[in-house]
Amino acid sequence: MSLHFRACIVVAAFALHVCSSVVSNAATPDRPNILLILSDDQGMNDVGCYGSEIPTPNLDSLAAEGLRMTQCYAASSICTPSRFGLLTGQFAHRSSDRLTGALMFLEPGDASRGIRAGEKTYVEMLRRNGYATHLVGKWHLGHGENQFWPTEHGFDTFFGHTGGCVDFFTCRYGNKPDWYRGHELVETTEYATDVIASEAVQVIKNSSESQPWYLHLAFNAPHFGKGYDKAKDAPVNLMQPKPSDLEKVDFIDDPLRRSFAAKVVGMDQSIGMVLAALKEAKQESNTLVIFMTDHGGAPEYGGSNTPFRGGKATLYEGGIRVPCIVRWPGVAQPGQVSNEIVTMLDWFPTFLEILNDESDEKLDGQSVIAQLGSKDDASKHVHRPVVWVTGAHDALGRKSWKAVRSGKWKLVESPSRDPELFDVVHDPNEQLNLVDEEPAE
Image 1 (cartoon, rainbow, N blue to C red):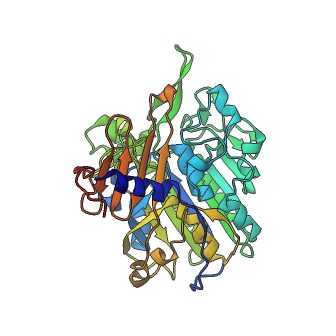
Image 2: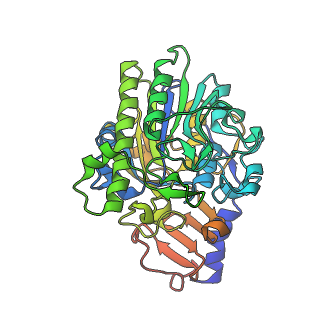
């Protein structure tokens, strides 16, 4: 591939002058409730309806009742930048604090970094449009100062943790308290996945039929837990499955994979509880439900991104192509499958279009209303170039990655290889590097 062609792809993405979202006259339900469920470190091969051996009947049922996406991309292959991209609709490398790597709870410098005023979230837009807004679970966009708090960025309520992970049995980061209701530290001794689900159920039960709501349900599962080693006086990474869930996956031989699977099974059961509460509240028909993961799984902790190459913290498909399921009665047809490109950044402009909000927001994503409707509409969907930048992280031994996807082409610049160009439509496993073969035209 010529330098000219390579430069064209990079310029098209990195020099993209972001456009305001275009609001169409598409007929959509008026102000639906929105339940967005986000899991943590879960790969494409970690959900039953995507081919996993892990049983996830509730997620599978959600897919059977709605839309399953096969080319959905996370905003990053690392937690913090992915969440920034989701909520702001902007690439993380645009953030004021350059949030391209994971914020570390015990790293002194990271206490003064996070999402800042002026970096608008779609949650703020939803609240402006009359929504009650709630965050239950993981935040990971700032923990050291009040200005980074969820309630400063559109959420009416917050119940959960600010750091990247917690001990699943104590809800602490190692031995450090990090579980809040609003700004107040609270103690809980229940298993973290159960604590999150129980709170989400209460939010739904207490919701008003006269006011639409947004619930951001961010599980820490199946991410490893942050336990504490008393002998070393230091936090330690542990899988921490609940024993009763571990028994349900005893057919998996590999102990690491079995521990990971147990956490997925427990989370799926919790999602079932939340969906049951939605049904009991008679709010199923007017609620848009979205399930996705923040990025690909980490094989070293039991996750699987099969058949894709790479995993968490890489920008091969395994690190950024993620499961995404959407149930929206009356819009997404039962059993629908979409093979079109969608990214996390697209939800902000999509919500703007749903609400016919013509705010002049500068966004890197684009509305995917067409994706959620008929296949005829979806076939007209052409996605603009998508960019990923992950920052170097000395403490975690990570180096910077960059990648661009434009149409069928994906260019990857990794720390240890020369640039690689893949035709990910015909080579989704990224085995054939065409960087020296593809002509400029």
